[in-house]
Image (cartoon, rainbow, N blue to C red; front, side, top):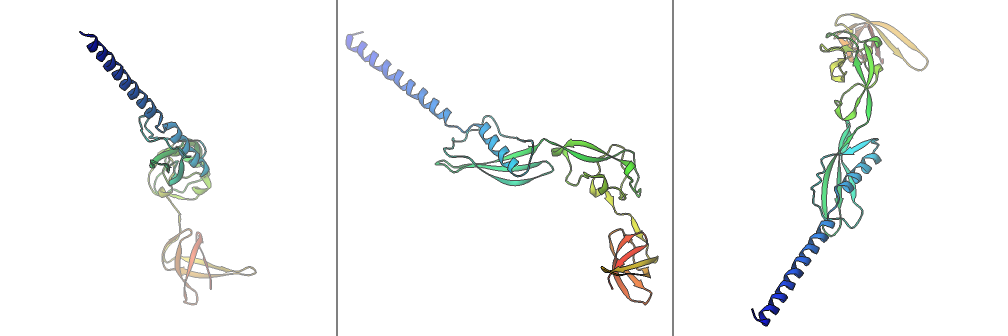
Length: 235
């Protein structure tokens, strides 16, 4: 190998080292330019807390996520309001390389629920002794769960349920208050006077349902079943 060849080899080696160093530096800069998944999670959690959530976690944000780092503060908005312990927050960057990500959030707090102390059959009317309060994670609750005993006391069970079952509004209904053809008491009142009269129910009705009633004078009126055998009307 001649001196000239040796010199060329040194130059080529130096150039190669320089290229590799530049490439490594580029990779280092690029790696530092990704938005951290933790910052996205925290932005989503903060928005959820602003909307009334207590202890909340952001889920489904992959650690391998590669989004350009945002030079400004991340923008957030509720994409889907929190219901039954879960919702979605839109996290976005309005910087030179804009992006938007939908982050599911989940409330991890425990909420009171009403459960049955005993097994029940269709048509049974619930009493306070049939119920008890327990705690359950909000994210696992059905949308129509019953959270207060007074919302279930006096209600009729629509289907068979076992002891320990969580009560849902869809499984309850108001008890029958009036049968078709039954004699009922019609009640009409204002701030100073209450009038009662007899009538005949033209259709069956549950408590709080509106039915048609024929008064003693033969007039057909509508009223709300207020109690068994009682219909409140307005003459």
